[in-house]
Image (cartoon, rainbow, N blue to C red; front, side):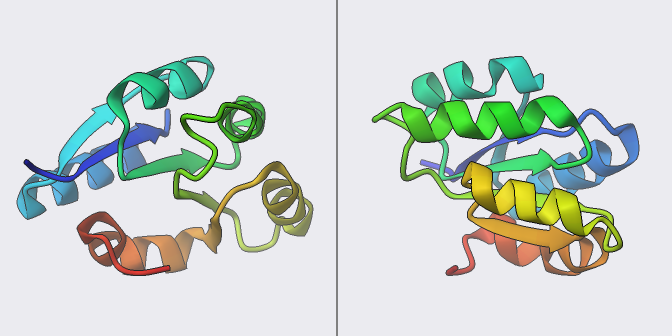
Length: 118
């Protein structure tokens, strides 16, 4: 069975990059809106969720993941603009597992999708 990830990234550029890289690695990918993230993760049981932290609804989606027993331990990687320290702090408080600047996220994308350890 292939590794599955869920992606809540409405930015077309980053979404396309994530999906293309996942397919090259043989990783199954599903995209969803932030308001569907908790429900889709509970059903699909992915190995990883990726969120764009510039989307305010994604922080609430992560909080919902952390409240539900089925998704509480899910690895969530979020990316943000490197100058937005408030978003980074809010993401950590919400329960995002790994908070990365966009540049670091892009550099590590293939490793993250392949299951690089935390």
